[in-house]
Image 1: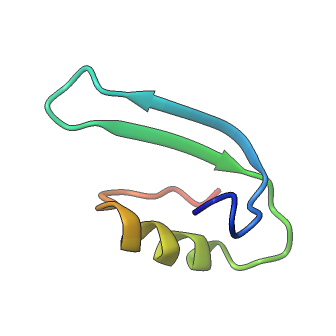
Image 2: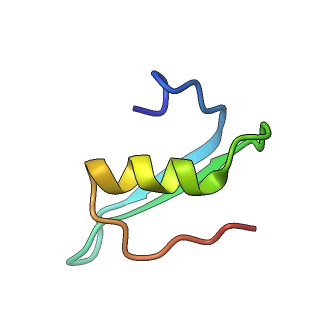
Length: 53
């Protein structure tokens, strides 16, 4: 999904050590609305929290 939308991924980390898996994703800002990325991610996996900084 990230590749098909051409988001530039700076880092991707996956932690499956707990009951709930965690994915930390950092993308390069390119002028697109970050809310668009969150909307796309929510269609693929349940997003519990997102930090837009």
